[in-house]
Amino acid sequence: METLSLVEQIRKRMEDKSTEELLEIWQKHDTDEWSSEAFDAIQQVLSARGEKLPQQGQLPINQNIDLEDVNFLTCEKCKMMAKGNHYTFYYGKTSGKKTENTGNGMRVIQLYSNIRSESVYLCDNCVRTASRINNTGSSIVFFFLTFITSLFLGGMIFEKINGDDQVPTILLIVLGIFSLAFLLGSIDSIHKRKTGHIDQNTGEQMAILSRMADLKTLGYDSFWNTEGYKSLSIDISTKF
Image (cartoon, rainbow, N blue to C red; front, side, top):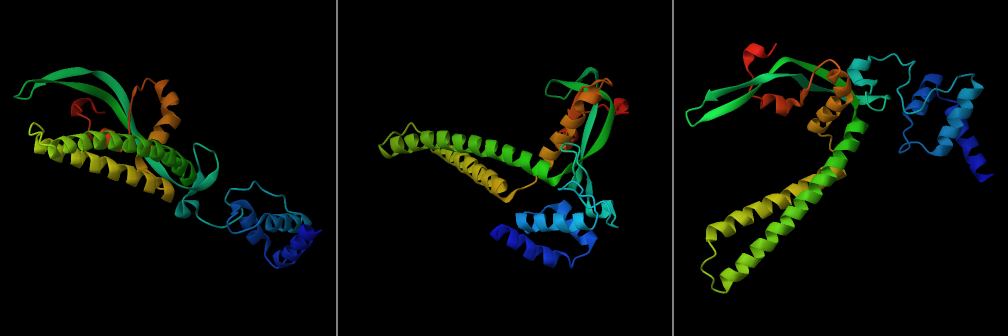
């Protein structure tokens, strides 16, 4: 009875809102801003007005807004309409190899042809979730490397203190730098995970995975994110 009383109180306030406003609250389904009782009250009001309740978690379909302006489109992964971004990746076909003399020896260059780019829309929630998983893995790896290098560094410092002149000082400095770098990497990964950092590379890899199967049926066998594409050694004559 107590819950019903609370719902009725909320319903009286919700009846003062327009149908469009209630539909927006219902579809956004922001549980941080609205309680379950509030959604029950909204459902009752909309039903009483003869409105068909749309799916929650999507942008209201009857709002007069420009979807491109607010970046609300259908996510390729979860198929939900939500705020996100387009992620661009590159793909092509291997077309052989060539060797060239660099002056210091011969270098083998992989050649590609029919290189194209494509953009895939992914919502922030999907990319953020994947980024958190990646950052968790990165923080574990960095922490492990910090632990290993610290063990070696500690042992060498102990030997150095005890008069072992065979331990080079430069080696201690290098191990100290690596240990600090691994520690900072671990801290950075943990920070990104906690703050919900959206990683661009993660989004691009997700875009590749979403299209890879279809593109492979067309004969494309090589895929790159933006960083990978920029690092390619490409024979320009076979680029297009």
